Amino acid sequence: MEHRDIRAAQPPEAGTQGFRWAVDGDSPSITAAIRVGEAVRAAVFRRAERHGLMPLPDWFHRSGGPRHSHAVWLSEDADQDGRIDHVALFCENGLPPGLMPVLSGGIDVWLGAHGRFRLAPVWLGRRDGSAWFGPARAWESVTPYVAPRWRKARKSGRERAAERPERQISDELARRGLSGLLEIYAGAGVRCGDGFIPAAQFRRDLSMHRPPADATPLALRLLFDRPVWGPLTLGFGAHFGLGLLAPADRLLDTGLWG
Image: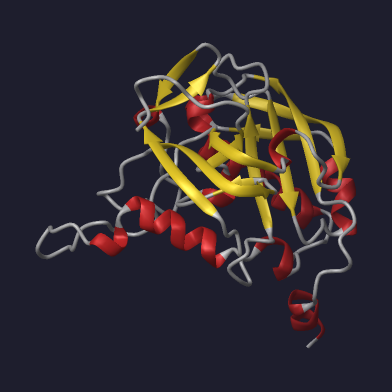
């Protein structure tokens, strides 16, 4: 009974919501962001188990509702060189206080062919008006959006209007209570420095899950009628850093958008 109560407990009044590490070692490509997010989560959970903290409360790592107020694991390319130099954990509900010693210690992460690195803590705190947090009216992709539902009927192969990517995006934002979406632009390349990385080059599968086979990775730009708060992650793999958007300060004028 005690075990069940711990898992079902409501989140406390949110204290620390975010934790950020610097990557020390083989810096993975930003195209491997989803795999990095998954691997970092697994490494943190292994350390939590060794500290006797498992199971972690459901409000921290399970959905529990449409607003996605549980943990997301995000990869960052702060210097825009195409390599992941920071990883962040954010949970709107707040981070379990007992988890802080685990997060504060150096964490080793092994990604097989993508290399090995160590995470060194550099920041903890609450959501503020910086980085991915916004608030902002315009947001653009840091990693590609991948639709979580099949666009085409499996038997006939016909496209279903209700499952087009723009409808899936609008539906997901509405479920999260993010109203006022004015425009959706979709392109084939994610901005990186002075250039673009083709969205199709990003890893899109998790170790135990794959996206729909007819899902095309898209670089998005969303415009709202009012500023909204981030971090904003949408679509398949959003808990692990796929579909991550960042505040955009100007309209894109390349031919990739439209």
